[in-house]
Image (cartoon, rainbow, N blue to C red; front, side, top):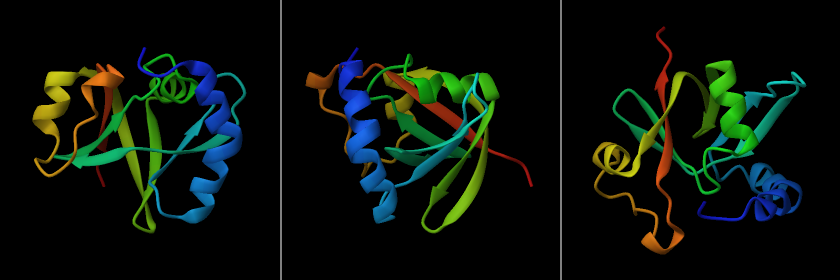
Length: 124
């Protein structure tokens, strides 16, 4: 796992609220798989053909990833609008890098990020 999960808990309580309030970052809106609570999580999201690709800095065991996989959908607030996303699936580094636009900086190898989440834009 690239980053320790405990750091994710610090981010969730300290840095994420500031990032969301700033409006500078894409924000994923998803529903808790057990609680049914709506959550907002700032993301490293990249547009790809037909959808978005998310860098899983904490790996696929993060709560937000598990929530999205369980729900099968989420919304993304990006550039002042919300888009509906569906068909979440984990993809590997090679598939992710092939899908990413060439001008997007790849995560440094030192972070050992090997999983990404890809979602499609909902039809309509």
